[in-house]
Length: 132
Image (cartoon, rainbow, N blue to C red; front, side, top):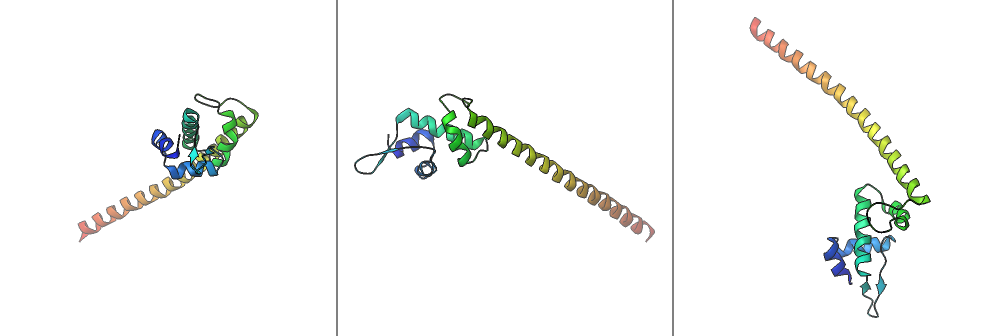
C-alpha cells in the first residue's frame, strides 16, 4: 500500500506518516521508483497504535520503546520495557496533577479575597449613597 492509501485508511496525513517513519514508529519499503510501500493491515494497525499511544500522552521516544510490546489488538503486551515506561509516565502525570491542584487552590484563594473585597466595596458604596 502506498502512503496516500495509508493516509486515507488511517485519517493521518502523508506528512505525519513520513514523520512517524523518521521517528522510527513506522517502517516502509521503497519501490524501484523510490515510492514508499507499506504492509497493508500491519501498517494500518501500527498507525492506529501510534495514535492511541500519543492520545494517552506518550511522546514519540516513549512510543518507539513501547512498540515492540504492542503486539496486535488493544493494549500492550507486558514486557520489561513497557511496564517501566508506563509507570514513569503515570508518576509524571500524578506529579503534574498535584501541581495543578496546588495552583488551582492558590488561584481559588485569590478569587475568594477578590470576591470579599468586591462585596465590601459594594457595601461601602451603598452606605455612602445612603448618607449623601
